[in-house]
Image 1: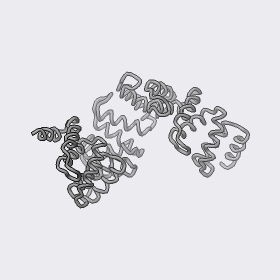
Image 2: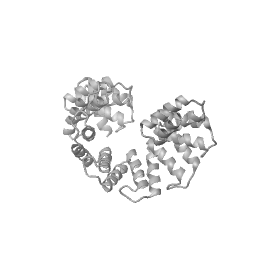
Image 3: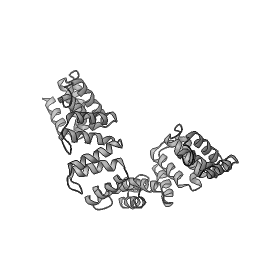
Image 4: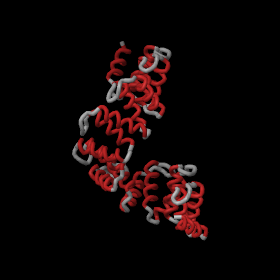
Amino acid sequence: MLDEINELQNDAMNGDAKAQCELAICYLEGIGVEKNPLKGIFWLNEAADKGNAVAESKLGHCLASGEYMEKDTRRAAELFKKAARKGDDMAQFGLGLLYELGDGVEKDYKRAFDYYKMAAERGNVFALNNLGNLYLKGLGVKADKKKAVECYKKAAAEGYSRALYNLGVCHQNGEGVETDLFKAFGYYSMAAEKDLPEAWFKLGFCFENGLGTKINPPKSFESYQRASKLCYKKAFFALGMCYFKGFGVEQDYLMALKRFEKGAELGDAEAMRCLGFCFENGYGTSVDAEEAFKWYKRAAEAGDVEAQYNLGECFRTGFGTKKNLMLAKEWYQKAAQSGDADAKEALENLKN
């Protein structure tokens, strides 16, 4: 390996773009040399300046993600365009993603679809999966859920975890295929084996509710725990509920509170609402009206319907804040617009 690296370095120093690109990847990934992102980016730039498509594409992905260098999606798009014209499938995928997100370029689902299709035709699993997403939602192309499933299947056949997960969702919801909860559970299991966080979360949900498998509280808890270790924010709410209810684990209000706190810290609205509930009622902590109000407010502002009703209650009763019937009505209305029955009843009561 040392001889190969020395040869690459000599060729790179002599201006060989292919060698410069290969050397860059060695430095970025620590292959045969000590990992050195600065040297990696230097050689990527050198190779990209000479028109090497792989280097243009790799540099574009570094710029788009902010990995190893400052994020610059406009420059990433320029590099992707150059490499995409030369047939580089990862550049075509990257450009499709930027058009889908409207990041560095104007959002354009049709162009996103076109670039994903180009890359998918070259067997790019990331593009195949995202092409499936566009077919499913009808973005940039006429909605066709069966074609979405076909795309997911092709990517899943190559072992791509997100495509396996998406097939699980399709079988769970009956989108493009007949509803089959056993198959859904199977796909979630395969995706979880590849440590996809949302797949572990879905497995937890399946074990909790008996979807495609028997209800199994300990396995549900374990699956949610695996998702939380991969920092999947929804998992912390689910874990908190397990501790709160004693589902699959010994009931422990303090541990529930801690999980809700972590989920809230990551921005999960349900965890924020439950944290408010704990402070309101003294679960795992002492009653603290102001803290309860704070977390209900954050959850309500994040769109949690139950929290919107709870916030209305706080304003109506003056719990943790000054009594304000106008604000109470405003939050009841928001919850009622989402179908919350308690909020509708509260609005009626305010009229009387």
